[in-house]
Image (cartoon, rainbow over all chains, first blue to last red; front, side):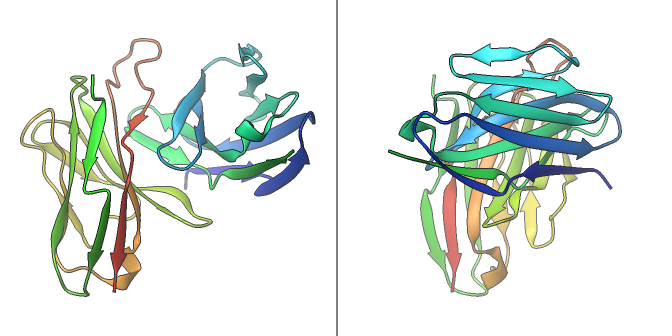
Length: 111
Length: 116
């Protein structure tokens, strides 16, 4: 059965800290891995990763994929209170048209 | 450009009532899907469609029906609501072609449903 596992489930840090969120997966026919940020409403897209070892970066956020070890990490440096959210990882599997989501990591950044 | 529009935003039902959650997108996306989000469970796929006239089941389809008569609309029907269907529902769509970046899901704002 295809599955995506995120860790930790929740995390509390102080402003300025650096955090690393983990996403591991076991799926057949991997096509891409996507990261989303969910604040109060709809998930918003952060990154899509398809190739191993190529870092995607946007401001203080970055992400990388390891297709050999079947995991991805999302790094946030110099955290701010506005980074408080649920971070979701999803895997897109080719051929089945199904996106499999992890349970998410709830991040809280304290001022 | 409205993106993905869901209605209603909130709904309270009694057990056994029926209702339809509406989802419309104006991005000419072939792929549309419905998820439910429950605490600690992440997003679970209910039903999805890869084009007009084509639908298929996801991980948790029981108690829900869908149809796709147009590219733009993908309604989710609850025929006889149960308290276990209390959840937040998200509609999401994507082009889902082979082009780079074409499989990024765009989400609607969500519909919070409570079944008493």
